[in-house]
Amino acid sequence: MKKILIIPILAILFTIACKSPSSEDFSSKDNAAEEATTEETATTSSKDAKMLAGVAVYKKTCFACHQAEGQGVENAFPPLAKSDYLNADVDRAIKGIIHGQSGEMVVNGKTYNSAMPPQDLSDEEIANVLTYVLNNWENSGGDITAEQVSKLR
Image (cartoon, rainbow, N blue to C red; front, side, top):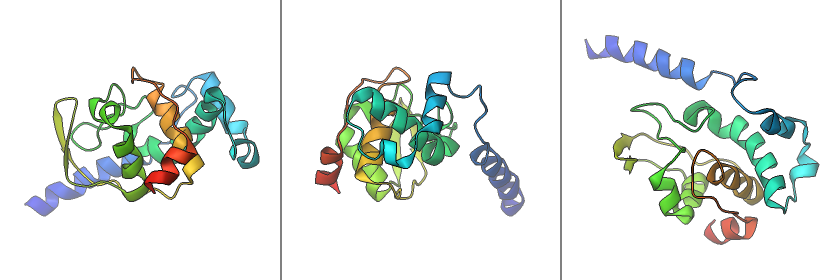
């Protein structure tokens, strides 16, 4: 009986994870990042440039689980939006992207117990995507640098 229930649940999660972003999922400002080349974003320094580069990384790497507005997936993937867990410790967030995370975590009062594999991102990409996430969805703000990421790698 349990095996029968697992298959539809996995199918639903797979469908959610594979949903590609529509033009309505991100603002037109965010879509400008789509046009940026790897060379143009390789050495971003201003916060605005990091955020533009970060949205491109977010769409490619984070969107499937954390969704367009960082809301996550109920009982599966924690939200990044208004995330007390994320905002409490940026170094922990950096380490989670580099090394992955698994086990129980409490985010905004709800317990999640899933796994995020390590992400194959450069220090610059991690800095950019975290700068983007921290400055959106009612998070605390901030400007992460590649040097910060490098020190924790």
